[in-house]
Every structure is written in C-alpha cells, then in structure tokens.
Image (cartoon, rainbow, N blue to C red; front, side, top):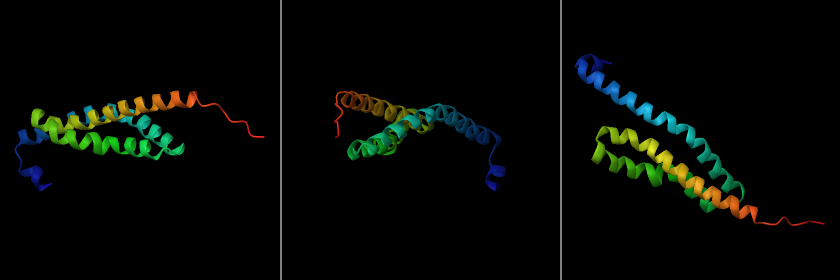
Amino acid sequence: MDDLLKKPRDAILGEERIGTLSLRLAIPAIFLVGFQIKAASLFQAIGKARPALILGMSRQLLFLIPLVIVLPMFLGVNGVSLAFPVADLLAVILTALWFAREIKLLENVRPVMVQ
C-alpha cells in the first residue's frame, strides 16, 4: 500500500489500464477453456492417454509459455496480456480438430454383440 502512495498518479492510472486491458482480453477466452478441458477428459475416459496428456498440457506448456516469451518482443506489456487468450484459442482449435477426428473414428466402430 505504501508503494501506491509514493507512485505518481499517472503511473497508477497506467497500471490500471494494463490490468483492465488484460481482463478484457482474457475473460472472453475463459469460456472456450471449458470445452478444451472436457474434450481432454474424454480422451482420458476412453483410454487414450497420449492425446489426453497432450491436450491437457497444450494450453500452458505448448502455447502459453512460448507466447509469453515471444509476444512481448513485438507488443511490449500488451503481448503478455494477449498471450493468455491466444494460448486458450490455439488450445481450443487443437482440441476441436483432435476431437472431430476422434468422433469420426468412433462413428466407424461397429458395436460388438455380447451373448
């Protein structure tokens, strides 16, 4: 709290703008994450550990870390804010593609009659 009192008013307002921008960028992407988590869980439920692992880690490791490193080089602080929704979107796209492929494979499987 003492830091807030010592900072100039412009600096505080600048930090508020960055925080506001970050939230405005990140919140809409959060709604996509639910699909990504559930689809990754589907692969685990049907016994496909490798896709479940890849999809489960894709958001944080495969996309977020590289984006947090690369985007600020081009966009500054806004690049960090933008990395989160972009990582979410890329993870959802990867998951949707893998999910659609798996659904097609499951549709071609014939049920086995047990007597």
